[in-house]
Image 1 (cartoon, rainbow, N blue to C red):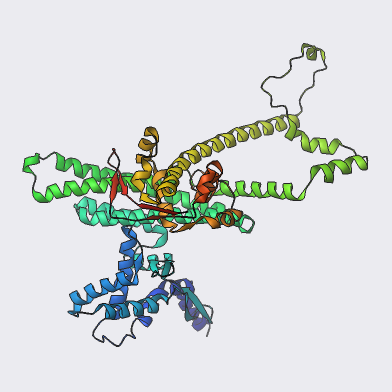
Image 2 (cartoon, helix red, strand yellow):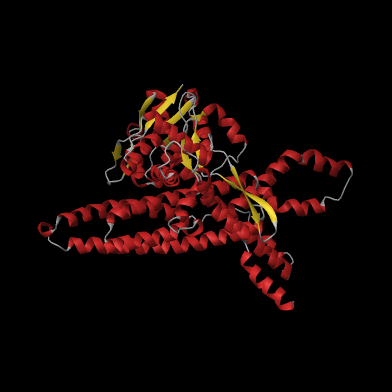
Length: 525
């Protein structure tokens, strides 16, 4: 009997973390359950076709196209069924199938599905929320567009054995293998994936920082420090791997360049061209990653700063020093000495020129106690911290002024032209700022942020600003805060009601060879 119980305990050890394992399995079961009910084309494997739609949406996200509409998915399905099953569907039939797949996987508007199961570890019925596809945006008289959620992205990456916490690192290894084997066409696709992953990492970190600003009192400080430590450690690993990849890519290019140009075969010339494109894309990705790394993602600093701001706001809103403290002190004839001890650090003499009194040499000399020495050290530390904070504020202000100049050029183009292009907006920059923009990731990040925000309605500006700290940071562009500053500086721009950046097939090139999509800038007054 005793041996039987011991065996049972050992056997049940395999059920440890059962919920987490079911959580990883749930998206696959969800797909298989939902995609088998389409009877119109019984010969079609709907699980494979539905999965291919997810891959199609991912592909659009990777290459930076506008998110997929139902029409895009229907066109893709027509191509797939004609190629794989020799079925020629009409546009209406392909739309019907597209709607069926969308509704099966995500519901009509990107609903959350509940996956129910029996947790054999706890012997309880439990459920897991699932949402693989989300609606990117929706406008009246226009069709909705769709993108993958983080869960949808994880599902597809898991089919390549890449898990979220190691996604960048494992994609780096995959890219390195492709470069070493000379599979440069595949490496171009992989570097696109890597670029998307870095962008998503930035979005997650910005979301974390926004959560800190909006709900700082609801965050556990110790958990935040541990998270910061893990992120920093992972960044260091990824950064070293990026340097290794760039070194290997450089070696491959140098090996090809050693061959006489006229002796190069067609495939070698093609490889050289692909290496050039690959190098440019990899430089953009590594620079963005380095930028996150070098700024050290000061999540803890942001937490402490937000706490300080909230404390200042609380003190200024709820404590009136004159009425609540000084009037009380005088009216009740209280001893002012404790108050003097509290306030004296706030009123220290910071003047650069102090008064020199030679007769002080005749005063009794006091020997500092150990406690006084400690107090002096504390004051020195506080002064150093004030200097550091001042330097950081000045650095943030310089960056804000630069980004505001970029944003101002875009707003002026929308204000005066109504509809124009990004290339026209950059012509409004002076020569030095134009040259800086060509290699400045703040410029590229600003354009991407504006594009991702879709239609920006300025009537919502005050409401948005009321819910966040009106400030920026060394690694985050707060466009709403900058809009407010620009409108204060240039009141005529307040006549703009909306702003949107629309993707095009056109490219604009800088003199250093960097390229960016020549977005349409559209504004309405």
